[in-house]
Image (cartoon, rainbow, N blue to C red; front, side, top):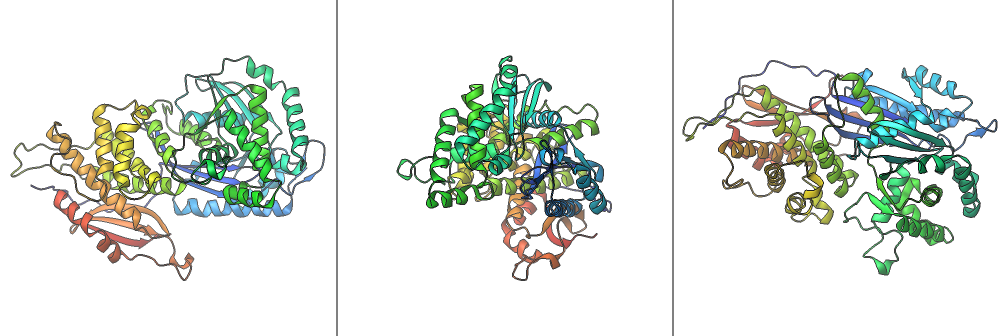
Length: 567
């Protein structure tokens, strides 16, 4: 029984044409979003999110009734943040045309906005698009469509930023109405120390804007929030921040299912608790511990959303993991790939939502890294396909990997660690149960066999190797594909757990000695002196079990190497 692969041609590292990125230049923070896309299937996956707390609007000076001036200090912080993003993107080999920077309220309303864009251009060679409030609202709606399957629903999208709040009503990708109000959590915090006066100001702005009459003219199917503030509110509700200690096992409980939804009553309780906490030092410490950098502005954001709920009679809000950054990228993809339709792949969106529901940022990052390694191995095997069970195998079936197999592998990698929400012990079994039993409703677009295959890949990504009877009743080729995909996944998950801290990307290739998996790392001089880096020999030793299994399945050795990035 053997697999035979011809030697590949020599390759060189080039620009990653499947990578796209967007920078959201906001009032409170600058955010970088990096995604990898598969234009043939309409899928994209967020690989990295970087955030810099620039506070661009914090030390502005008002020059007129409607404009302010960005200070020199804020400008310097902004350029420093974008420079960090630029260095990171350079290490990822992102094509320059695949990056767009958009500036929102703080720059849009600044009297010296041209000074800001010119400074970024001169210092970094990057162009910044200052988008209108209406355009910002449209792009946010486009981002939300990539997270929720609401293309055929009439959607009210609300995004609370540092300097403004965007409202959009959309249907089938078209914006029916949009409005940007100068109500933001940073500016409200600056203007009001008294919550009652803040509420009065918010109510007046909402009532005189004409917003209520316009939105009430639509038959809204669902209200969706998409900003960092709304996600922080959802997280606080989810973890029981507003509950008393005796009412819950702990106000900051990590091991909970995130529903990405909260009600008007839950929001009201949270606002009351935040306002109560603000009156005593213990409460302020609790708030800072939970909300961290957002602690100074969360009361204003929560009070603002509470008033929006009341005036628009919102009872329940769904929360999107995607917003402006993903909307900007979605539009770039539409321009870059002819016929690219981001609304066709409901399966992938459901997989991503399920992963987001149970994973925090750290676990989500681990899952996407595992996926990236698995994709590289899968792609390498595809290039040198032609492998075929032969010799003593009774039916001589060949196994040709296709796009659907890659989709199963992607889904399994993204979902493999969702069981960690309940603890580390036996988490692969917990993940298996969540996929196959508890959460079938999340993945209705998949067949029963697809459910079973993805769940089994997750079940056997660690610990015991799969037995021969796995996928009982399936065709021999399906069993063979499972064995191949499971081997790829086990190696990928094991590699992810022992990656160097300055890992950047991975390459899979074939050599006369067998397969090579090269882990490229950044300049070691950038690491602190006390950083312990795993060596290639140590990684191979740690992965001895998985490398032996790989050799048993593919009849080829797999060598793991660590190499520095060549600039």
